Length: 100
Image (cartoon, rainbow, N blue to C red; front, side, top):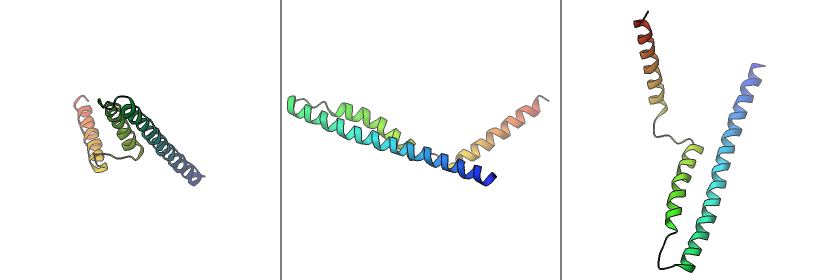
C-alpha cells in the first residue's frame, strides 16, 4: 500500500511538472504570434518609428522567468540550499538553548 502512495505522489508531481511545461509552451506560442502581429503593424503603419520591441522586451522578460520556473532552472545549487537549511536549523537550536 505504501508503494502505491509513493507511486501516486510521483505521478502527481510528474503530472504537475508536465502541466507547467505545457503552460510555458502555450505562453511561448502566444508570445511569438502576438509579437509577430505587432511587428507587422509597426512596419506597415509606422515604419519610421519602431515601437514593437518595447512590448517584446517586457513580455520577453516575463516569458524568460516563466521558462526558468517551468524547467526548474536555478542559479543556486541544491547543495547550497541544503547547507543553508542546516545552518539555519543549527542557529535556531542554539538560540533556543540560550533561553532554557
